[in-house]
Length: 282
Image (cartoon, rainbow, N blue to C red; front, side, top):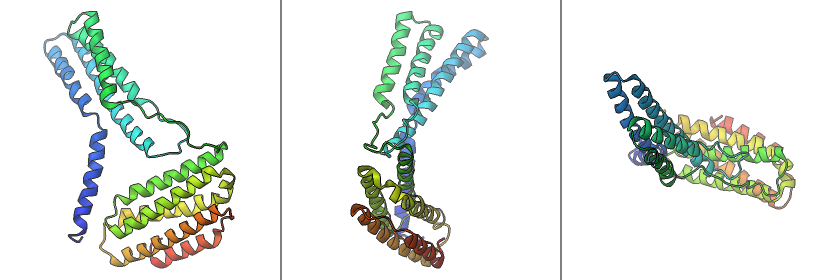
């Protein structure tokens, strides 16, 4: 790998690591440690009942940390999407309640605080969790006039393909290829937006969304997965040619959709498949 590509690779890897780090509820994992130490001390002291209570509080806080981390990741992925069929399960809210209950039980049953004081600790833990981590993402449907469930599913699945292309882009270092991928994502999102505004055209675009967009996602994902394993300039050049053709076809199909023309994709898809085989990508 050239020195020019290496810094880009490290920046993308660092960005991905940072996102994963930010999604993890590290404070809750740290907050669970005193309960673990208390449980070990009670076990050493032979106080079985207090050991069970302390360990139960530790497990409750640890479970809250796991739920909160999972909920934050779900929130991040949900906010990346505009067209979703259902809201994610409110794990962040559930985690905050579990944290509050564990803090209350630990304060009252283990630390021996008064009822009101322990209740205050539990409420403070719950509210503090809301203020620090926030709550689960809540959003209304963006389907607007699209009422048909099949059409909603088509749009949601198509948007997932677009998001997958965006994710695959993070593993590609070449700035020129990234530019083509940005164009593909932009054009694909424009197609989705146009279909939402004109739901009667969704049946016409079904072949485009199912065949062309899926094929594009598959090709990009395979290239992103394998191109770093081998040094092959020919593969990069062929992939660039494929992306150029995909951008052209996406642009043409968007224009046809705007002009209310029926999508004529049979020839385009055959051309794409032939091109992929010829270029050694498929």
